[in-house]
Amino acid sequence: MSKLYIFGIGGTGARVLRSLTMLMASGVSLGDKIDTVVPVIIDPDSSNGDLTRTVSLMQLYQKIRAQLSFDNRPGKEGYFKVQIDDMGTNFRLHLNNVANMKFADYIAYNRFPSEGKADSNQALLSLLFSDSNLACPLDVGFKGNPNMGSIVLNDPKNTASLIDLLQHFQTDDRLFVVSSIFGGTGAAGFPLLQKTFREAESLDIPNSAAIANASIGAVTVLPYFGLKEDKQSQINMETFISKTKAALKYYIGNLDVDALYYICDSIKNRYKNVEGSTEQKNQAHFVEMAAALGIVDFARSDIRHDKVSHHTSFREFSVRNDQNPLSLNDLATSTFSVMGRQMISFYVFSRFYLEHFHLTRDYAWAKTPQMKGVSYSDAFFVDLGQMCAAYKDEWLKEMSDNQRCFQPFDLYSNDDDVFETIMQVAPRKSSRLERLFGKNLKGYPAIDSEVSDVSMKKLRGLDAYNYFMTIHEQAINNVIKKKYNI
Image 1 (tube, helix red, strand yellow):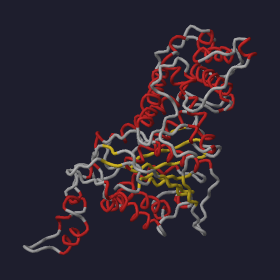
Image 2: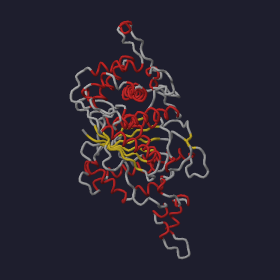
Image 3: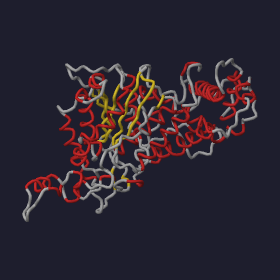
């Protein structure tokens, strides 16, 4: 099995990695070629709210995954199946010499002697960069200016941490870049990063040939949200389209990637205009989840790099029904087959765990030998509760409340039957035989009954945490299959 190195550039890159983490938590598979992802965020704004929230989520995923093993699991699948490895980076790629530094200082704008007259070098730099560019502190990002980002991210001093990260890159490992095309960090970073990969043999790294010849995929996120007008901000959404056109024109003939995914949407929401730091924390958006599905598609694909033909596979994302809000039923059949059942399953599990699980701790399954001596105040169960809340009460709700809305579930319903809260996917009616034998249970009692049945099976070689996850996930998936035939 191989690793997929994923580079999320800027705020959009961080948010797409957040969606990917949620999809993997729900059990979305990366296929039979990739078993580990190595995600890293590239952003000079180290306190960016989107970045810190995603890093915390991936760390939480790691803690849960560290307690699980799938070797003895039936089917060897399940929630949290994919490994996440930060390779000692804490999920961040360090950029040198940007802290507490203005852009003018970074490019040594004031080093040129003037001798009482305008210096020609300074004059040239003044043509290329505005006064606001020069005065911009780099530790809050590039504020939508790719001309600044291309200078900083192309600095050879910033390749050292990248080389450290790629020390363990092996043949058959893959590379993927996530970036927006209408901002500053992503638009500048993507072409420079892929160029570094393809020219890896010039780097002092033992496995440079494997990197240079690796399969590279990328998702380019076109404008999908707007910003409220703020005359004090350097970021102006009116420039988004022109920046996009300029970047797309540059990409022609200047990229050597094997698969390029495009994703966009009409702008339906305008966020508060925040230039960076802790306040930049956008709501999760359906487009970011769709971009994450591009990563899944690339991991599952048979795409290989051909250094002779330089062929690029161009791919786009679409839905079956152009609705607002979108439900699972509006997704293409191929999309639903990748993540539909998994999202439903982990949603039901999250509701069950947060609302009902505490009532079941004296049931028969909890008295099996595997669960003997287990404390439900263990860090594993606490972490699992945090992940369920992050999935249901944050990520899903943010997508549901955003524009365009993605509302696969009725998150505000008081319906006691969790299976009635799945939007546009009606459960089938119980048969007369099922009603006769008491198998027409609804909601959590249906899950409790199925957990009881599953726990009676011989599940060998499972410790408490793996046993708990196995019987509950199997039970929920069994009920879902009976009710929805998926």
